[in-house]
Image (cartoon, rainbow, N blue to C red; front, side):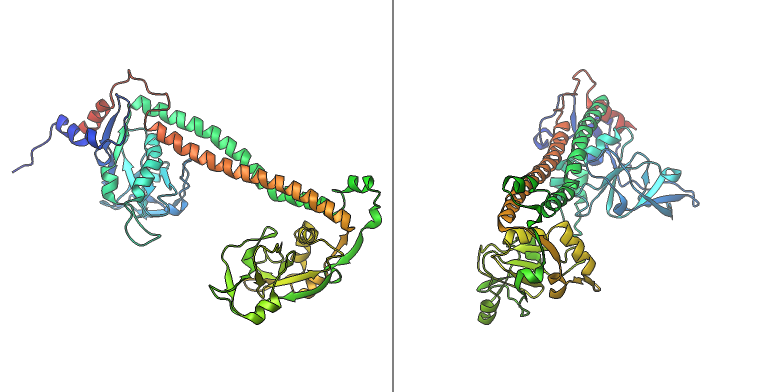
Length: 454
């Protein structure tokens, strides 16, 4: 017996989301629709031409994300076989596998040879030519969609997939067609302004290392304290050229013994030397009393990283006595003469562009790491001003670099704010809260009727 054909009104009622299941209120002329009633999900290739070829789109090359340019790379030709899931120009595709799903790897499919393409099994494809394709793209980029999809993950950690039941039953807030276009235009207008601001902020961040290097260069070439020397009657010739070996009592390698996860005293390793200071995260420990006595650090000690990657070897930090600690074998304690040089001055100097350039020149490169031994760092020459001028240099550097760090922090916070604003804009867009809705537009139910009648 043939299955009874549903009328358009029956199809409409089956497609609409009941009031009690609607996630939030939308404008009167919108409607809530089950996703798989509105879109063809993972449409199959209906072409019967055996010679038809399809472009293959790799998920790895999809830019996607919350951006207004939808670019991706089309891979070499594949056979377009009947019955295979295929894409077509105008489809919206998004990743269903973590972490790509959370990172909003999605796209609008455009520019395919023969108008057809294949994709990886990690993509979900939505097809509905009667809905604005960018409206669909932004819908699957909303935090609402991502956060709810994340709760349906199953499979191996790092390769988890969202549930197809979630996708098919997801309630879509469908706006009238003209309103869809207005929403897309408003999203892209607001995003363009935010992207412009983001670009300018990023330029400031990108210049942070250069600005820091310039400040340190001025400090150790004497330019930063030119005015101070004039005001205090200090001659420009008061600086003496010395080297690390001469300014130190000893250059002492750290312990070679294996550390433990829990113990009496922290053991500082190369990863604990960050930006001239000690990072107290990811600590290991020692219970060896001989080592604790032999390698114990005191307030103001300067540690030099003798072995690391080519980019990081030679980084230096100062220990400020925050907690008892010793140091590991990949570090050298520079036991400087405290009547000749100030620890902070010494630390700043060894992180200066001149010191970095020297370390890069004298390092010995291995397969996976580089090394600078005590003899080589001991030979590094630099100008040593009077103690009073060193104090002034440290004071100025503390001030200038603190301001620079405040700028960097403010920029990073601003970038986070921009990303938050984008999520907020998308959330408001699909609630009809961007001020674009025209109540006189025909109800979205009429659009849905047309779609269901096709």
